[in-house]
Image 1 (cartoon, one colour):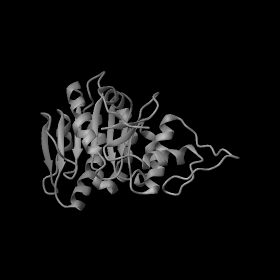
Image 2 (cartoon, rainbow, N blue to C red):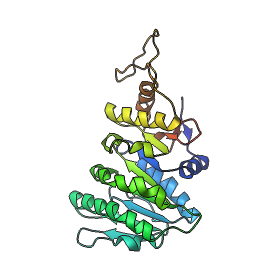
Image 3 (cartoon, rainbow, N blue to C red):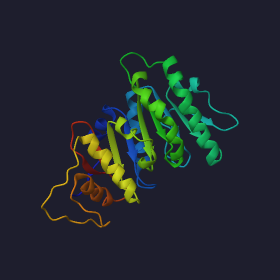
Image 4 (spheres, rainbow, N blue to C red):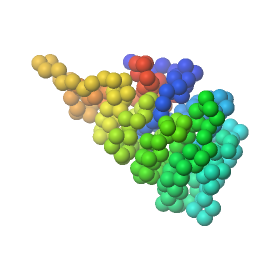
Length: 250
């Protein structure tokens, strides 16, 4: 099935639900979708917004946000980041950026509770640190508390299989890009189908086609793996509540 262009309708759907996980291999279009489409739409809404980004994913304009640079020697004060829409860029060596990310994840729940968003509004927390995937293992408490704190998370991740078990189920919507590894493709397929409510069944008595990875296509998960494996750079499947997934060009 040919991919259709990503439109403002898809942006609205992606932002309207709960937490959004944007998963896929490096260079497939995760940050381009985030920086070029989703963030400008969020800024236009005027919603309380905090973006934490790794310099490897940063590109494009700052959209008029307060810009903060956080380093190992001069870490950003978490409480100051919530006063107005803010873009935080991590600096330093890879281990130093991972340590800063883990510190922010640990301190954010208390800061969010102390500075709640205005009544009737949602605060968006955007975590675009996909190159620091190991650090994402430490954000489980933040993800589990975010909804009660009035916060919606948008997270990019290179390898969803590296997330703590059970965390992908907390994401209501998914934008799934191609991945290089079969295990990651399978986890992404399971996440997509879980979000759509599809169950994996194994029909019997029928021929089993094989995809280009040599995997049987007898189950919904295996068929979805094949569809994800056929995506090109800049294409993804968007899965949102109550809507069928479809391949889109971002």
